[in-house]
Image (cartoon, rainbow, N blue to C red; front, side, top):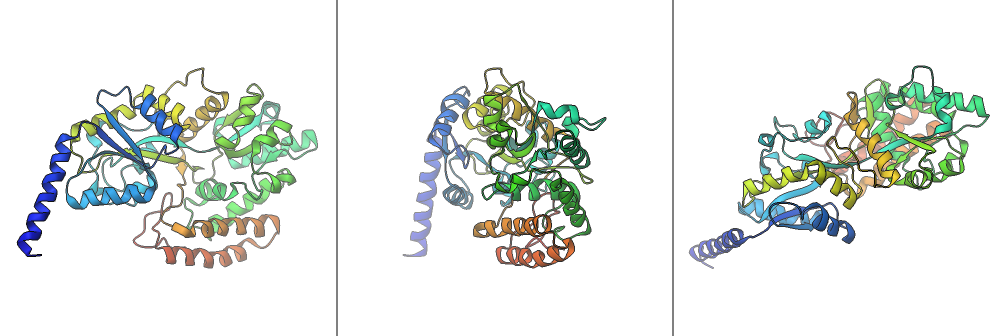
Length: 422
């Protein structure tokens, strides 16, 4: 093919793309979220039907989502109007490929979330859209044993340990429950809660002096933990049979307790340590690619997603919680109302210090989790020396980060290249 013919073919392709763009009657909402059929139907019928313009909601797996987006960005024009994805998806992108949304004046109730959405720039590159997380729950019988002066919505780790010790003394049974079973989400507690609360990091600070303190505190907590926790994976079961009075778990793994006996339990935020109230939010956001065919229409749809009524409709459709201040309606399931309030308090707390989901690890995600699980089993269950275990596990962690090339994620400070284990 001659050079001129190639140019003509390319020009023809761009012309067709431009024609398709101009003929587009709907705003294409290209998303990695709400992929199950019932959720995507809820998005179309409940969340987006009330928008002033027609929206074509198309959820996809991460691979196809990124392939089409990159193709349009490389072409310099396209049909995607709005992007929906997790923070990790956006943080892996070049911020220059996203429209600056700072002029919308929108954001989450959490200043921390809004800072994350800037992707290291001076303005919003995406707008927080919805969130999920892990929380604490307690039987109301435990409340009379709270340490003097403790606020259940602003607990520290020391107060949680003292509270659990008080319950043990009063009942003769250790009633703090931890999901340390084979299918429990214990690794997320260490990555998103304990480490951010004590080290202000996860990877960089893995073997730091502050990490030693964190594991010492975990040993203290374990001493007042129900020893059956090594078999616990869904703490709703132990809350209902009252083997456990105080528990940590994912909102979905506590739901049955609140739905079956809503008057017996309370939900509240995770505790805080010396470097803040570490918690692991699953943050999804909405953004606009610079190749959007109608920038004004795309930004109007982004604004629609942050309306209180839209946030409630999104909660009903996806079970992801709002990021803005809303009053939850009374007809939601008790578990949603309880967890939603706890998540809102936690994410908006002035000492919030989110430890985000690991990003960029690919097939090594399981190996990454194993580093933290092995540290727990060796330090807490087997009683091995903390410094020696961390120095040993550090080697495995360094290997994972080097092989994947994954840069640091919050709360670790950003890195050029693989996140270092310092």
